Length: 556
Image (cartoon, rainbow, N blue to C red; front, top):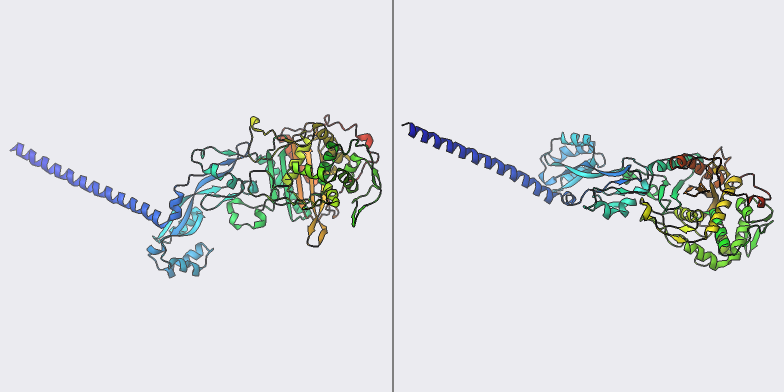
């Protein structure tokens, strides 16, 4: 009897276990089926989301010191399945319009009545909005987790970084230029280091912005370039935009004036012309004097100086006084072939050589008449980007080697050899003359005690449909420091400044752009290891006797 009872008990236990196992399998099957349904439903009804599942996150972009400039984060998107709507469109549409007012009630009604399988209502939604929409209680609304590109520094280096679209593809800037590298699964865990220094970038942007506001300019551009490697430490274009909200920005704000816009950059071309004249043997003695006693008449054109010296000038004096008359004569003596060959070697006849896709094509003369050669000598008749001008000055200062600029951080062994465009001796001589311009010439307001700055101003009238506008300038200063051991080029430019009380309404580069460069250099020098030193400077003693009548005011 006990044996039979035990057998009956075992049989009941087995039956109970079988029932539990069946129930467990059924629950598991239901859960698996639900998960499968939602997975298939999402793939079928939300193709964009399905595709995003196969796109790897983008790698971080960092500055040269490892500071994060761009990073992927998880974000919410809100979508709806109109074909599975539970609430009536008439009831739901006003509520959606209240929470997401970018569409009208009528537009939401059109979406809800469309019977589409899936439609996005909001991409990159804040968690607060997700909670509010979820409280509406509509089962057909779906909440998706998507990667979002975040620019934690907001507007800092916006034109360098660019931005991405909703699908995570680079649209502009380095996001576009490095798109393949940033989404490569094998490299996505390794950040891309740019040449940009966030500290230098912030200072350049701040000083340009302050100068632009003070002088009531339409725009501004600036650059800090390593003269020996070609690395861009800072690149700024104003007005600026926020890459986090790029869709809410005007085309003008997204335009990179450093690489896309081309300008006639005026007297900043004069040092380039002088270097070419010395290097080609056109000028063998910089003490030779040229007639600047009166305007220069060439055919129907008249070339004059903004602040005439009314006397004969040698080359250093001509640069200190920023003489168009003397520069035109020197360019005329060089002639078309030497002038055109030099600017071709400088790559001024092609878009700037840098990683960005946003590049402007220079305005290169179709016909090099005699007057064309003469006016190009002092920066009229050819238009290039500010980046190209800064690159040319790097070659003037670094011993004569032109290197393509880069926005990628270089290791010591990665610096390209570059191309020799002028001799080392000519480079040294030009550094001395650029120092004189800041000590006694048109660039005096860029001078910072102990920083050994040299450079040149350029004030060019803006060309229009009916000739040049005498009331609108592009005012540029290009500086190099420290000139005793050149390391950095700094360019500051204001587009059509209106002047201020501090400048007496004057809008020339010496008054409005040179001071900006001086403030930038004073702030970035120490953080880049260039400290003020009153006991060091480039030796200009051999040139000082040539300055028979030094300029005492600098407002060109």
